[in-house]
Image (cartoon, rainbow, N blue to C red; front, side):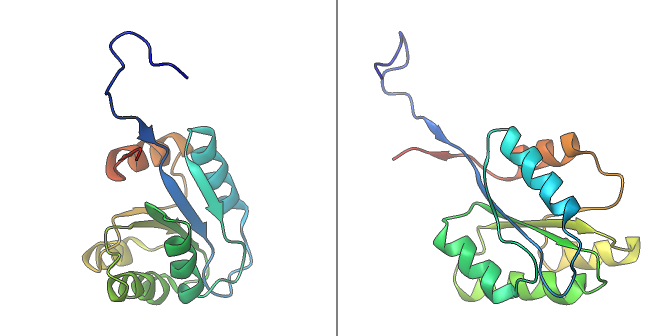
Length: 146
C-alpha cells in the first residue's frame, strides 16, 4: 500500500496484543469471553487461553505471543494467589512490562492488595465493556511497527 499525503515516514501502530486467561479451577468463562470479544471488536489482537490454565501456562502464552497485556478472570476466590503468581512469573522472566489487569468476584478490600502487588487494573461485576476497552487503551501502550 502506498502512503497517502503526509504519511511517508510516519510510524504505524501495531494492534495491542492481549492474552485473556482463566487461571485455576474456575470453570465459568462467559465473562472472559465477553471481554475478549469486546477487546477484539475494539481492534486488538486477543489470544484466549481457555479454562483451567496455570499461571505458568498463562505467562508462557504471553511470552510466546509477544503480548502487551494479560487479562485475568477469576470467580473462584483465588485471585490474590493467582494474580500474584502471574506477576511474580513475569518478573522472573524479565517481562514486567506486560500489563496485568483482571476482574471477577473480587472483594473491595482485596482490590487494594492486588494493586499493591502490581496488578494494574481491577474490574468487578458491573464494569462495562466500554470502560474495560478504554482502560486498556489508556494503560497498554501501542507499539510501533518494525
